[in-house]
Amino acid sequence: MKTLTFHVHGMHCNACVLMTENELGDLPNITQVKSSLKNHSVEVTGEFGDKTEVQIAEELTIPLKPHGYTVSVEKNQHNAKWKDFKIALPIALGFAILFVLLQKLGIVNLVGGDDVTYGTAFVIGIIASLSTCMAVVGGLVLSMSATFAKEGDKIRPQLMFHGGRIVSFFVLGGVIGAIGSAFTLGTTGTFALSLIIAIVMIVLGINLLDIFPWAKRLQPSMPKFISKRAHGISNLNHTLTPILVGIATFFLPCGFTQSMQLYTLTTGSFLEGGLTMLSFALGTLPVLTLISFSSFSIQNSKKSGVFFKSAGLIVILFALFNFINALVVIGVIPPVFNF
Image (cartoon, rainbow, N blue to C red; front, side, top):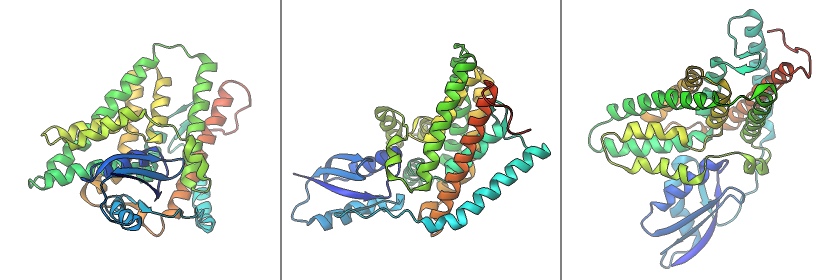
């Protein structure tokens, strides 16, 4: 038995901690795994025979590489890839101009007064589905698909997963909204919660930019014991597994999902809360469908840096729009945008 520590390249959020621990924990010669987002490392305990640390790192990389991670003995220097901003910044500015134009024309109302509308939730869902945080959901889907594919059943589990996920997001979102109705937040309370949502989204956006590694420690996550139980459902070989996995994704450590869950609490309505989370889930549907039927991953693309920086800037813009609107609602500033 040996306990060794390796560096993990590609970690960016708490979902990565969960993913690396589960994937490496399934290896037959590993008895204990502990990942660290702070140090971008993983500590493994197991029987490795006479293998060198380099050979062990190569073996540990095999199950993690499909998810965008590599294991090494030495730590790599962080590369911020500032040149990606040459393309990402114009894309984000173009999106912002289009966003304001659609608002002015009244075609789409993404942000309305003091709240996040269904259009906003849908767009955030699209961004979330393309962010590497969704790798943990993709890993769940792929592991589940592999199990059923061996039995010659490829389509039904996918339909059950996506159907269960969409329905559960509506129902559980509605429950959160209904719980919110039991509280009278008032103007100040609503502003405070709006501020928390804005801060969470800004942290998410900064992490997508991938220029400040320390910011990844600030990202909120679901309690680890809940996330582990949710991830473990995919190991059950049962007819209802796809539906259970779909429901479990509501509890996985995706910061985007949690920011939407925070917002639904302010709706004070089962219907509004349910429709908000439903809109978010529908936004994630196209990419998750691709992940279901293939090994699609934007993270492995050559243009991934440009995409993530563009997405990060757009998420930050969303956060600022909503924060400014919250300030307008409590009367701190006059209306900035005439939407």
